[in-house]
Length: 63
Image 1: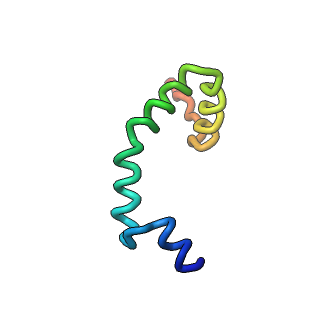
Image 2: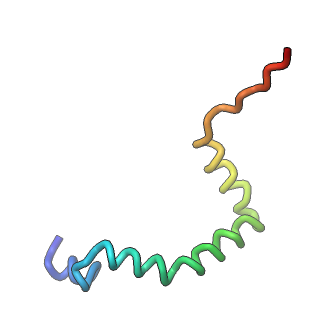
């Protein structure tokens, strides 16, 4: 990566601070967008994405 690219991506040089500041500013809008998606046609897409990462469901053992 060139020096110019590094400065463009992270002008301050403090990567951790840069990322924290970015997400602090972006967090509310990001959360609002995810909430909207859960009340839209994307709900089923999110559900499929999340479920594939869950452990298999355990069945209850009855005596």
